[in-house]
Every structure is written in C-alpha cells, then in structure tokens.
Image (cartoon, rainbow, N blue to C red; front, top):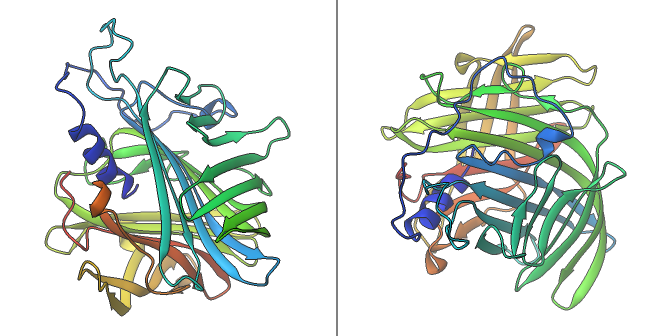
Length: 355
C-alpha cells in the first residue's frame, strides 16, 4: 500500500504524453487467488508490487533491518501502439538497509520500461528483474533476491514456513469507503532467511525472518488520502499481524483495517473501528524537518478484548530522503513489539501525497 504509489507518480510524470483510454480491471470480492500463478505478474492491472521486509542477524552478532520491493505499473499507453519503445509496462525496484552502526538508512533503486532483456515481470510465478536486480521463486519453493546498491548488497533466500495469509475477504482488501478502492492482497509471514549482506567492503553471513506482501490493483486509494501508517509483525508465538490506517489531509483516518493470524492458524479480520494507532514518541528529521510518529502503540480490538502492540524502532533515523533523485520522502523501518518484530511505514508526513 505504500510509499511506492508516490514513487509511481514520479515515474509516470517522466513518461512521454502517450495517454490512451485504458479499461483497467476492477478489484472485486469473490475472486479466488491461485498459486503459484498469483505469485507472478498481473499485467492488465494498473499497479502491482512484490514487497519483502525483515530482520537479519549477522555472524558478527549485529541486528539489521532490510526491505526489497519490485514494482510494476501499466501506464495509460495505447496497447496497440506498435513501437517496441512504448512504455506499456514500467518496472522499478527499491532496496534499503537499516544498520544501527551506520545510524541512517542506506538505499538504492532501479527503474526501466519492460522489454529489451533489461526488465521483466513474468506471469505464472514470481520472476521479476531489472538489470542485475532480481526477485523470484525457485523450484524448491524458496524466494530469492539479489540487489546491489552503492553502499550495500543483499543476496538472500526466503523459505516459507507457513501457508499463504490472505488479507481482507479472501484476498480482497478494502482501502477506502468506496468498495472500488481495494487491492488483491496476500502476505507470507515468518519466511526463514539465509544469505549475506555486503557492506563497507565486507560480506557477512546472515539469518533472520521476513515478511512478503503481494498486492495488485487499479484503483488503490481514495483521492483525499494524504498518507498512511502500515505495519506487518512476525510474532514470536508463530502468529502474524498486519494493520494499517490511511490518513486524510485533516489528519483523521479515512480507512483502517488488517488481520491477525494466531499461532493455531485462526484469523480475525479487523474492521476500521478495530484498529487504532496512538503516537507515543516523535522524531524530527534534521534533513527534511518532517515529524514522524516513530513510536506508536497499535491497539486492535479482538473477540477476547483489546490487545496492544507497542511499536519501537530499531533506531530513529530510518527516513528515506529521495529528493535528490526525484523520489518522495518517507519513513520506513524495522520495529520491535512485545513478543515480535516487524516493519513500520509512515508516508505523507513530509508533505501530503498527491494522489
């Protein structure tokens, strides 16, 4: 749900004026997801992403957070345009490393139109690549990624340990008061991570736990949305929690939701009134002057009562200031909670998103 939408706007703003009337598919309830096909691309839809976050423990004993995201979008380009250069599909990728020893976010990105052997998002199974960056599902069922940014490189494998976690109503996830503001959405929590992190001329073997989010949509957010708070938490008992709130320009909540899957596999779907984010601590960025609620308490109402999940960052300065390369400004970082770890996204705090 993501700050990626803001990144998408930047990309599309740089494309030539080739607009055409495109009938994008509408996300509707009652559409059954199927695997491995839905690990692959859905090129008819406007937007789509493969988004993996997690915690790593190095052989040096240090904790690090990471995220890798591949994004596909279908611009409003005439599908009958015969030119091989027409940007009928655009892909970009973003990766970041949160290392407390560095004290700020390290990041890198790639972008390209699909084709020419440079960029591809395959259908039928996960296989996304841009230049030498890739994310795919292997024959043994593991997902793997390899990315190399100026300040770090990741070479990681993710082994599923649980079944796919369908979000919303069987994978139909509402994002606003209009039922059309929705996505097809599933997660894969508790992925077992092995691999390596290269940084500062040194490569360190790592293990850890990750969370994969997959979404595709044609009409993702309400037009009055200014930003969002989202978290995905791997709980120590084997449970998993996803929760979000979409903020309006007045600071109020436009929509909220999520799901809790308990260790026994039972799932509670969270309605908008079941999700509350309460700010406990703020951090002001010295680079952008944005004020972020980096400390929050997430309260979710369950059948057995209200359960609180404090969200405390690995460190405060996990802001990505992408203004120098035309990217948006947002905060995205590793967080701890009581009985678990995960990731928190905060968008629209430096300035409201123009959706």
